Length: 107
Image (cartoon, rainbow, N blue to C red):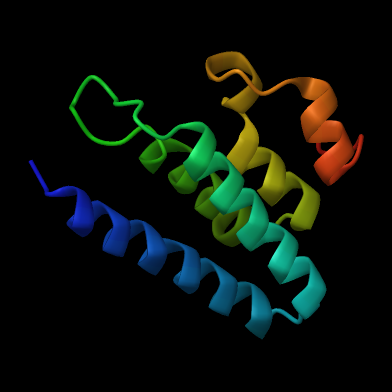
């Protein structure tokens, strides 16, 4: 099993690769900042949660967000929703909180 610092480096690398790909697609810097904020929100929300494999839970939402961003080439709101898709179900955060922070389209 990786050490937590290895997971953090891995996750940060995944985010930066995705953001770089989106920047090359012409996504506005303000929208890239929203994506980075959603990543940090999801990471904080899932902090301490583990998958059955023992890996941090956030590995899954990051993988889903990369599929949405890179393979499906969807827009910013679907990418943010991918990061957050388990937050309301698996953490104390509410749908109203997600809506207030990211808008009704994401919620």
